[in-house]
Length: 186
Ligand code: S3P
Image (cartoon, rainbow, N blue to C red; front, side, top):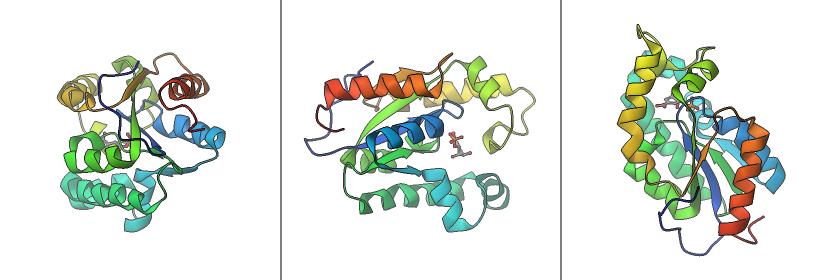
């Protein structure tokens, strides 16, 4: 589904995948990068290599606010690559920073991946998501975070529901949409 959001000016676009935890950003991004012959970057992995800590450990030691600052730096560093050379998977909370979103928009097309709360719970069940830990009801936590983030999602250019879909199918949908809205970028 193409949203009403205006696309960035004609230039080659990075493909940015965002969306809630467990919506498949990394798995889909890796497939797209292979298909488009582009470099794949996951901003969580950038933060981890900068800090030398896992995201969970960063939250534990320094808290969410500090993580968000590192995340913003990771997003800013994407501007060092030639526009159109990247497929990027962001952490799910990147939408909360208007600075990061502006930076992503300046060189990319932002694709929002969504999934139902049940699917999100299924896919994130293995842990490693600090925001979903320590809560008595993960379902309520997921629903409340989704509600809080809903207004921020409107900024994205394209939206794809990944519920009951394999990453390869989602990648196929994105590639078809891409051919329509940005012909010649493959
Ligand atoms: C977060 C999502 C995580 C990670 C951090 C915070 C969020 O990334 O950045 O735990 O705020 O939604 P994934 O969406 O890749 O799980």
